[in-house]
Length: 365
Image (cartoon, rainbow, N blue to C red; front, side):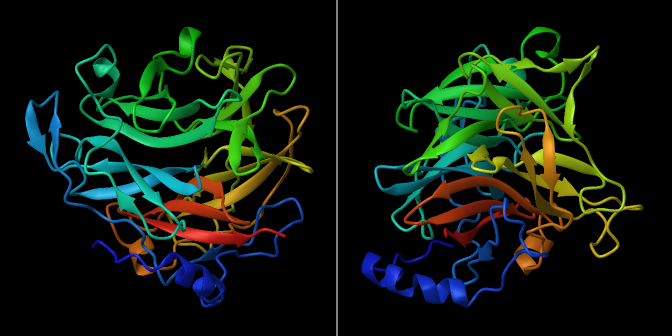
């Protein structure tokens, strides 16, 4: 449902009330290195749901309702004083529960969004159709390069194999696809969820070199790591003939089934903070969470040695609690993927039950 936009002045007067009225989403006292607590903004959530947009699909050669089924798992960027969401949207066509494309929505307050009628990144009759059709383009993460170019990592799904890809843009509207992110023998293997290490510069999140290389956490079972000279082609770090796992699931914890990067990894004074998604095992997981729950945790890595894990949260800072988080295309899911620093607060955007998009706020100290 489309929401009426409030006057900007009224929204900012009421923002402290909106935040105070919401229950904290954390499940533990936040360690000093963590970016927490986050508070779900119940007065506006979910902020985006399925929409009526129509789009002429160049592959199907027909007009499709490209976001009529679900919208979820957005990246987020601050640009020219506005918050932009690059979100995953699904139609109802195809053999695999719909084809995914990336839509764009903008907001002056970070809470109420107006979206473009057509997607900005989608499968086409190009050289990457082999990877992207007909599952589509999924789950973007976005940072800026030091030169001001937007770098997106996304998942291409052909219906059988997910592969991590890279695209770039100068304006968030027109994107150039650069193909598979991982090079060498990993170019065609299953890969997902690329979170590039970055730092906050004003309200911009800018990729940061460490030891003369860019770094990216990726993966959706264990978390692995890769490096790059240019943000476009990435070389995974290996141990012998295996990828080097820098974060693994833990029996008995909320992240017992899998771990998967959330937004970009943020360089802070204490180290590199990675907000990550996790799934609870059916048996042998956290007994305080329902089996299969997707919740969110945080991990701290060394700022000079990004492969070195220093600390991690023992409990999730966000779990599915609201009806739209518990029931949907996939039940019991909070999946974090977009994070911005906007007007002295952190805004965290997340997919709920693979069906909607919601927002939580952390007031910066």
